[in-house]
Image (tube, rainbow, N blue to C red; front, side, top):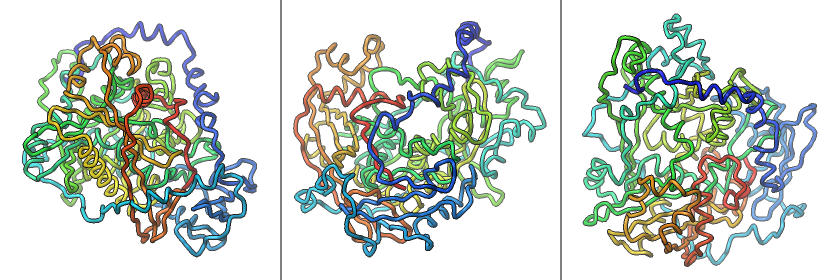
Length: 633
């Protein structure tokens, strides 16, 4: 079914592994400056370190914060020692901790949304130029209201597929969903009374994957069913979770004033680790906008991964068959894959199930990985995520160098489940949240592995992820709606500027520019979809290392226009000019925005942008488009 018949020789891999000490090679990522983002971006954090009454500093204990708003400086403090550290014990406690931080009565805590707490500046030394923190009043005066409250996300019935085709978890893995925290793989074997054997301890390898048995992926522009639904509901833009979540992330960065995630309750090992989103989340990204129905002027958004196969393709393909390992009984999976002597692979007629959602003129498609039927007959659907261990993700092109890396402890800076959770906060949860919201899913079922074996499982609810990224569910919902509305308005504006030619394909690049407090959008106007078709031919990828190689080899002189979008959040009627948005339940959020035509972009600038947009798996890129980051809970 999913694997090619027979076991392939691993001698070449083993010989390669024998040349180095894998554990030493892996641990260098946690001890050298090679992966310390704080050494790449040297921007002072707006707080002063104070003694926390402990020999080990903790970024969440005993600090004095200098909150910045509109040039107003208010000194406040809180002591995180006032409640116990619940190491790696997450869930509802997070919101309580955040509420304590904001509403503490024992210390005067500055609430960024409270006008009465404003005070005169005490010290402006950390401002390079106080004027830099002010909005462009000329732009703000002509800014439009973003009317995202007017529309709600509407679920569209899938009349073309039965929900019965959505698989369920097998091998008693549903018990993981009832357990808070990590469920070790050894415990899974125990509840299955040992019948699994090495099922999760010896994973089939990449070379054994039979790709013909994996359901094909159809981009939105090629999905006839998606187009039919769009025509039925009068939609203007169609897109999938994989094509739009990265754009939604940039919308969130702008609306929140580049707020960092919440890291409460992590251990002391992360005192000096970055408290911000990974560069891979902040970097530019690009999409294709293509008219698929000239009569009704319906557009599709397809993803743009660059001119060569993504470096994480190994993990993507392994993730597909690992999903099936979680959904099939062990014996059934072995027989279907031909790994059991005396059996032959069976034909695979599976198909993916999709949910559809409508937000005003945007139609969204979401693939549903799995479902669970509760005792009362109700169902909940969720994502399945196969998560490779940290060092493999950090250097995926050389992942075979790190196959000896194991997750062997609960907390700690390396070789721990806590490391994986910390990386999920910085590099996974924002994307997972958007995917869950689009598909109406309850959470994510995660399998932690190193491509050789599974170390453990965990079910993380949507609510927990929202608290980590946004602080509360209410803010998450508003961000999602506002992000979609902003995308819709931006696309409409760009099309009104460049025209709606059925033969045109637009490549749109997005980057939330923190230093300029604007959303930069690069629009390359292509006269046809030749680029999209050529990209499937290997002849164009053999000698291409950078985007400039592609354009020069074909003699393409791209026509590129740059747009800038200004986003102005307003909390409880108060414009927040600089500080990260600390939204609390019951607050009101309003947004104003502007869109300006910046003009024609020079070739070199555009090539630099694309180069950094396509480096999707580089955690530690020292590039101008990654930017600095504002510190804020």
